[in-house]
Length: 172
Image (cartoon, rainbow, N blue to C red; front, top):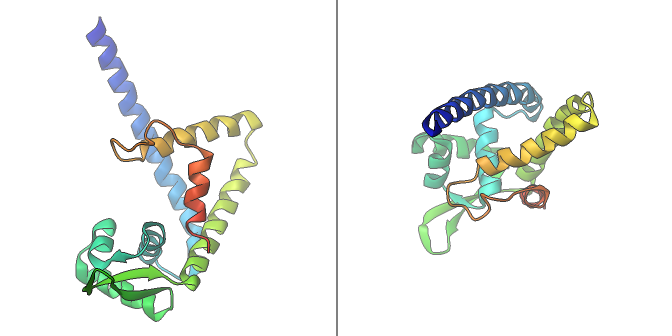
């Protein structure tokens, strides 16, 4: 009996995971349309986001985060640097290593894009009832928890405070 319940729960988890996966893809595709106003390609915006949220990163760290080879990241960073969106400086602990950080212009560009995407999403949310928005808020908090690495101290709790802290990291 207990084994049968576990199988049913496992199947329900797979079905829910599949629906969440599809919903996430559709949501990102819809919001990505707003990114064209930035003038940057999706890979460049993604790299800029990693640089901003991850703090000054090495080229190797950035390549690993973006799951691309070092020559690809090198070209991408050179382009972002030419546009004045990032700068490179020697690592204080090892001057052979370059750390890439976002410039004020890069942070502004990413924040403007975020505002456009959030505004588009808020327009859609306005069509939902207040009860549906509350349900979605709770679901968003659960999804944030799901994205934390295993063993993360906040994997049991997350909410508006943590979201605001992440958002503030891009401002300034």
